[in-house]
Image (cartoon, rainbow, N blue to C red; front, top):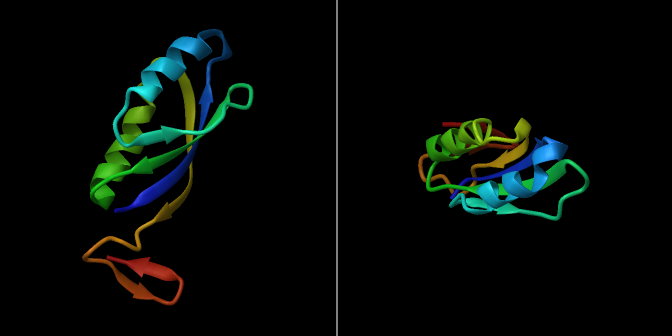
Length: 88
């Protein structure tokens, strides 16, 4: 199961409603907000699903930016690892 660490920058004026919307998204776990910034973890069945979810986060009302910090593909069945790099 691929995991992605993200940081969401939210519109401060819409913070409460944006957090409620984000909390209802399956596969997204939010951390503690720090002002307008909210850390999160995206979990998906495969890499494409994770990428689609990260892209969909940009379309949530009140989300200004989505920064993908790290993606871990180690559980991806068809992944081939060579040292620290991924190719699939």
